[in-house]
Image 1 (tube, rainbow, N blue to C red):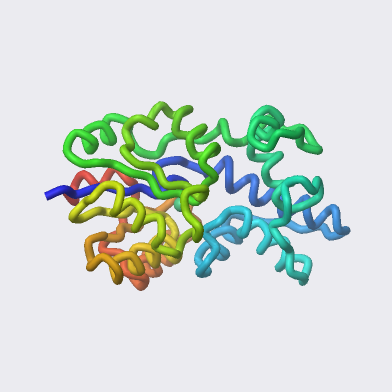
Image 2 (cartoon, rainbow, N blue to C red):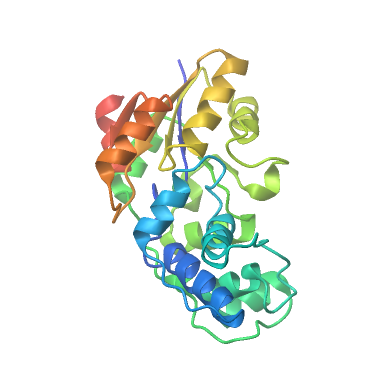
Length: 255
Ligand SMILES: [Mg+2]
């Protein structure tokens, strides 16, 4: 029987505590500053927003933080607009070189790019061991170019037989679309899905199971530097996680 292992990327395979999380804080702060408001945000604020349904997307998390501080709705906006939340986010996260490569124009402000400070969270040897017996896949909300850049940088792209990004689906998580695509592509009988978002990752698995008949086991993974692991564990269990791991590597013990 084929048992596939599907990984969410950020917070599960890749440590984003110094990259995407800093881009969220930096862009939300700058968005507020450009509109005359001094604001401070912390990792606790990020976790609070990510525990709300529909807030797995980092651009949306940054927009929500700015929106709460300014008291008005803040759109993610268009990257072509130099003062949009998305532009402020991407120029910090990607830096000049990658921003220019991915968007075809230079960012308004020059940053070195936080994307190059993303350690691998799982041991590569463990992933290779898993790969020997199971097809591995990724279901991420990242744009394809950003997902592949990070995986190539970590030297693990070839371990995955399928990679579904935000470019490959019409609807992001918590829609089950990406998991259903993987089911179709890989033809697995059962799969583990490891995610660090207690709402969108867990609910995507639940919704997929309603369609393909309980073939996906949802597993919560506590991301690094999580401000309140106990509260997150509780939310994982409430939303259908079979179990909660401290590190993706521990999946080995479940197989
Ligand atoms: Mg994640």
